[in-house]
Image 1 (cartoon, rainbow, N blue to C red):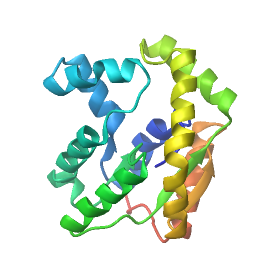
Image 2 (image 1 turned 30 degrees about the horizontal axis):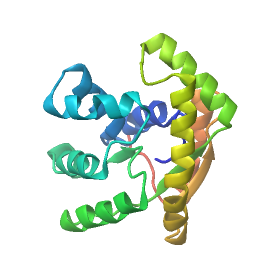
Image 3 (image 1 turned 45 degrees about the vertical axis):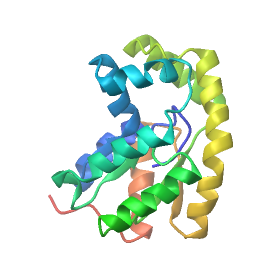
Image 4 (image 1 turned 135 degrees about the vertical axis):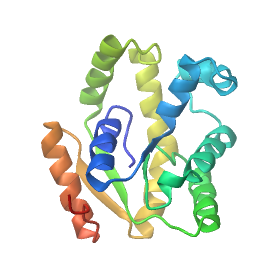
Length: 191
């Protein structure tokens, strides 16, 4: 899943992981957990995240590769917020080839910038996220546009992108994503 910060990727990833019975792999969640637990990785990324910067590709790629090697990801997975750069796309291609798998589809969730800022400021208040100030949010949105737009074009050239409007009720967005995935031949397993 790709989309600007605050577009609803994390919310939808949890729902879709349950629906499709696959793990949702969120690099942001992994990093925040490590920061909260003051692990070695957490100490490395804490200041980077507080400034609204992206964690360096080398660390992010290593975290993703490690997570993809776990047994629950063998039958499929959902990547939430990774890759974010074209270099990460190429590294992910390498990883997936090494694991004998490939991506099936890229869900691009779109959302209005002012709505995203409002959502993230609200989330900051509810969850106490120090990395969600308006200045940091707008910086992250600018980074998203600069670094992520080219990889959307790359995936679109592979005919893997389905675009879904991320605004509206959570259930409505989920329905739009499930319908978009169906157009690519991806259906949820029977209950």
